[in-house]
Image 1: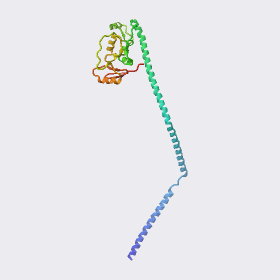
Image 2: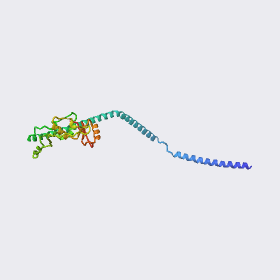
Image 3: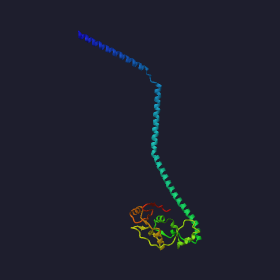
Image 4: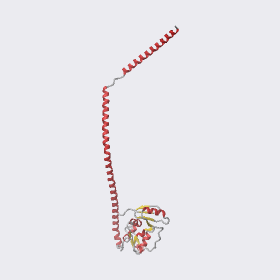
Length: 263
């Protein structure tokens, strides 16, 4: 009997639990129904509007993609055009540099002509119009003209007179431009250090006075086949303090000078 009562109590407790759960489920169902009713139904017009915007965006994307592909197809042609334009610019720059060099040479020639036009009357007034400039009387092996000009500079235009004391008479009437006079020399040449060759040895001179003069004016100027050879000699020869010349350069222990080609 006690067991039956205990079973009844258990069943009664289970029934209460079931009823409580049923109430909670009903409340949850009611709450869900209320939430569902509170939700707004989809707006068909807005959906169509969004679809239209999506289609427009897709069409725009396709159009931009087509434009990009067209531009990418033009890249090789445009790059070739750029290269041709750059080549043209380089050619024009080279032409401009050449024309500038020619203009400078012409300006220098014009200045020299104008100077000669002033100098000739002065030389004639002093009975010197028959003199020849030094450059007209000396000759050097082909290819070494630049080196000789770099070493002598304005002395190439010097005039020979028998005695340098004669220039004292020009004090009251100085030349209208820079001018150098020289008299024949008779000094003996010093021996060249090491295996160096003198620049003056490349001159073709028949006059002993001119040989002595060039030996003096070109003292310390030696020759090398090219820039590399001159650099080697300048760094290894310790017993001199002059210049090493090549056809296109001039150097010593402390400087390197590149000579412009003759115009």
